[in-house]
Image 1 (cartoon, rainbow, N blue to C red):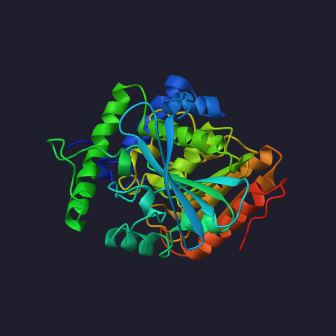
Image 2: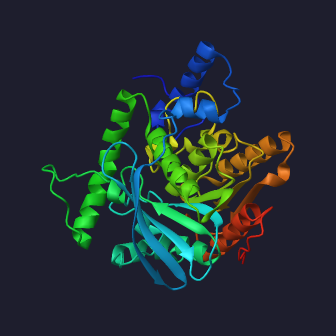
Length: 381
């Protein structure tokens, strides 16, 4: 039998008798390259995650409009250069003319890939009972992108690689899937394993899932910047969980984001090693990042650019110690940049969610940072 881990070393539930692998790997990395105390920059993050170029949306198209519940919406689409066209919704408050601050509302992962934008936004039709259930669990029953629009923002919510209009055909024969609850649930289950396959293709194509998603989100940002109904230079982004991962990546790779709100997607990597790795998407683990820096370093690499991070104390996907350490690490980065006030870390009671109290606090921060220096009136609370 092989040697058991040293009794004084940490024992990780996911690794069991391989717990000593963690220390061995760290010693090997340090011996090969020295300490990994490297300051991240947006350019370096792009190099690490791959797909670092900026390209404008191809053949953008505006479609039909609708109105209801204080919001005017429009269907828009574009190509990112591969795969099916990205479908998106642009939302604005009804009866409010002129340019408004822009926000990219980023849908989550949630192991629910059949839909994307529908999870966080109300469009021209119903999204069905499964989306309603998800919103009750994660969003306090609210389509938060529409609420943002009602408060005085031009909001773009789009499908990203693997979700909604950008999802793969997983039936094996190329036929479209059905849209009943059972078919949707079957698709979502199949898509869990499919993400591992996509991650392998990303490696073969010299990129990562984080890089592909961040690239597509930057294309969407380019579309929003091009709109005449958006205040020039005033665009933020916000998302929960996988959407928070996207918000961190977008903040880190684009100088055009004025403020980023990351919800329930923050921890140091080291604190995840004890039973908190398996639940997460490949977006959260771009190959090569952990050898250079930590996840909070990526989120804070554009300090003093405003950054808001919301944590929940009973988040089942992140240990409280990891969240606290990340908060302290980000706060230290912003203090070192001479702008401690530009980082806002908010802790809430509860589990992994973006409930109405958290939404109110987040929207107030978006209003505070995006309306600065403009004559635009944004409803904060």
